[in-house]
Image (cartoon, rainbow, N blue to C red):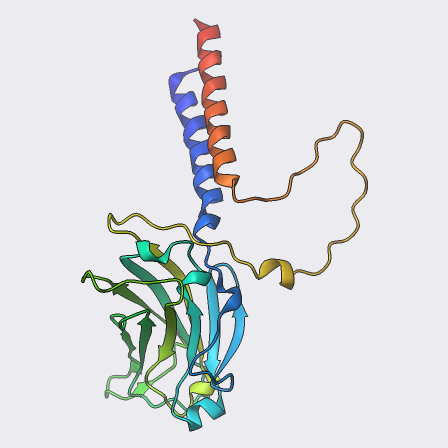
Length: 248
């Protein structure tokens, strides 16, 4: 077996490990809820291991609270005190008939002890400078950084993702927070707790036929998937090395 082939096999296996390890950074959005101690201010539309989608309610808009989705740092991380920065993506979906003023949409996150950088979404402008929301979907980035020794997260720290624009048509607009990542002082990404909502959302599995005698059964997924995958890469590399020796 040629060295180039061995290298390609190992590279492919390593890529597989990278893909399998993505779930380590999944966000536990399962417990996301409302802010201001008022469940009428926001409607959580959906959650998965990567995102939460929510919208304002008429009651929330009447109270001038806007749309606020809340979760605590302890629900996402084993040790929130390690966090020195974080990044995430905000996506607005604006229906064509939404009564959203053409001035723009904006917001940010109350991130434990300070506000995030924040963001602003501009509408689409025609040649005459008239704004509209014809594109429908708008994506921006936001982040938070702890630069002072007195700044930081604890398990009880609130992360409140909110829209600050409080437009009249916001109850028809969907806001999605996704790709939330935390980083330590050295810029290394911090692994998050696994998403706890999947088991509750999945329908009961159909009864499976008994495994044939001698057939291998598939073990339940665990948090050690990345470790097992790395071992698999090492095994592939070892097999490749043995094949090389035999060719000599």
